Length: 304
DNA sequence: AAATAGTTCAACCGCTATGTC
DNA sequence: TGACATAGCGGTTGAACTATT
Image 1 (cartoon, rainbow, N blue to C red):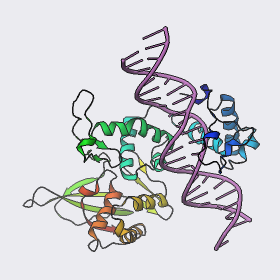
Image 2 (cartoon, rainbow, N blue to C red):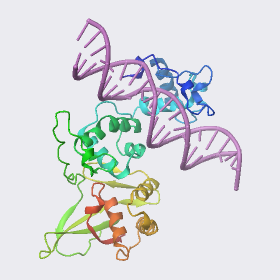
Image 3 (spheres, helix red, strand yellow):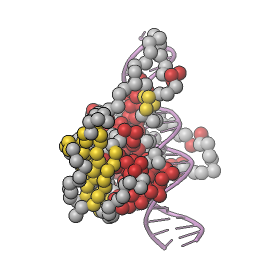
Image 4 (cartoon, rainbow, N blue to C red):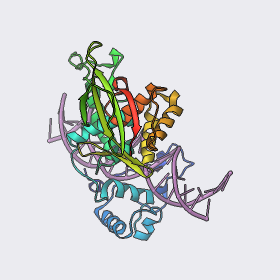
């Protein structure tokens, strides 16, 4: 649907619950509702010439009868050349699911990791399609875990029970993994995280060693995998991501300390707080690894 | 063919974070 | 340090569209 084809946008000003706050678009003479192709053209050419920003005064400068907020939204969500239109692909859907499991409804952060998609796109796709898909699989879209209360698993209108809960997704962000029988670590520049996961039973100690690298410095970080995705854009984002999503909130100080050591390329003694270290690495190494099944951390070390 | 129900998604709102003075 | 402006976020709305009865 293109907004420019619609015409009946109702003025909702009179319906505002809080009438003491005046929405910016209620100013007399300012237009609301769907944008026309002419308005799009004016806004596009103005922003391409003058650049983004100063949205409040942009409408006057550009000759648009819109509020700045509306102009910004139209540009960011629709007119920007980098905005990708069309169907969301399987790979994008998979990434949205995994990022949502980690980040929750933080649409902007999720969108920031999916080139060309806006937060509005992701949000709409989630609420109209993905959340329903998870529910139909017996998975709670808020927690990404199977519904605990069987009453929530509604039978369909023909009395059939819902399908069984989906198994955990396979690790779909490949990282470099090799088998090893020793737990020594190998340096990988510029920063290495290592983990060992015991497989087999107690009598058969076999380790899978996973190694990945995170290029981080004071200006930012990137975490690239073989899918070609670069996850993350700024150090602050990463810090916020991790702090908001650690399930060990009571250990925030330890977590912060580990994290600071990590970004400062300092060695960390993981044995004092193994659970927090495990959580940190689980979050860093692979967005798809649930904390419950994340591997045991044996080492976090800096290398130059 | 018409009525109704359900879905989609652009655009809105209120609120918060951040920057500037 | 506080006031104000601005940018950006997540939640919500509702017209347009599509499917079903």
